[in-house]
Image 1: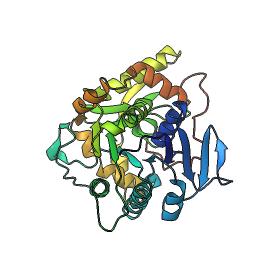
Image 2: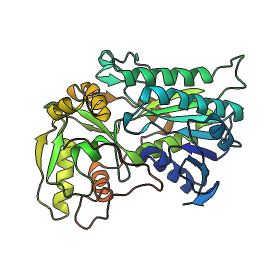
Image 3: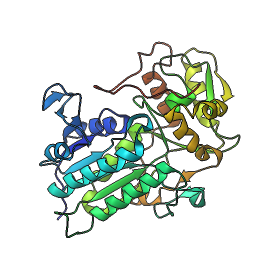
Image 4: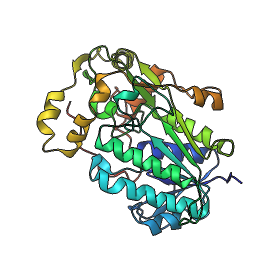
Length: 349
């Protein structure tokens, strides 16, 4: 029988997607726990959530924090791509161990790194996963382990249910390390120019973070009716020629009394020059193929379950994002979640 309670452990609650999912679940009446190394007191109550001191790399910490939980949101990743291949898989193994021990469902924000060009231009849940990058190979293995955890195994105490939601590049008021906030504009500064990372005329898919979190929450509330290993793709916002997001940024700036920003090509040449010395830039260069050809996701299975995909109009989403980043006149300083770790290396602008 599926576990349908409403106690959740969020790993990565100080990050963009983890924090947004945690807040939305809290607002819908869930009992939310978070695990974070920087918590001053064990079980500290903050913002309507219980903050538990612990480390996602320590299995005993994750298992202890998950006791009595119905869902574990696995939204934790190594910062700035550092030690990616060393940390990603041990962390998901710890989450699987905790989930199978208590019979909890695991929710994972998925990526399109799993896919190689042979699956483009339209990605579906069953598209072949043959990545040609190191990060993509790690993500494929991560999902393979999750799928295995939904099946009985003689060496494991139990099984768990898994929900994976894939979306395009995130943007939103509280997204830190993203292409929007560190590639297109500069947080805390007026928008005088917008960088265009994509090749001319190449489309790109974006997803407004609150919509992604809302989708996960709605699917979670229906998890008893979903397959044990459920995957869904979001359509998000499709920028057909690579300039529509920049145009929306320009409209928001003008609406707040600023001058229309000019458009310029993203300095990939600088990424190439600096990548031998900066790990973050090496990883960005490796993923450049996602900007050289159109990649979008079909959301038919998601619409079949929810009826429609949560979708904030582009101009409203961009305005909220720029206000949250402190980029519009009268906006506050960029928002950060409590206990947010040190910001990753900024993309060149």
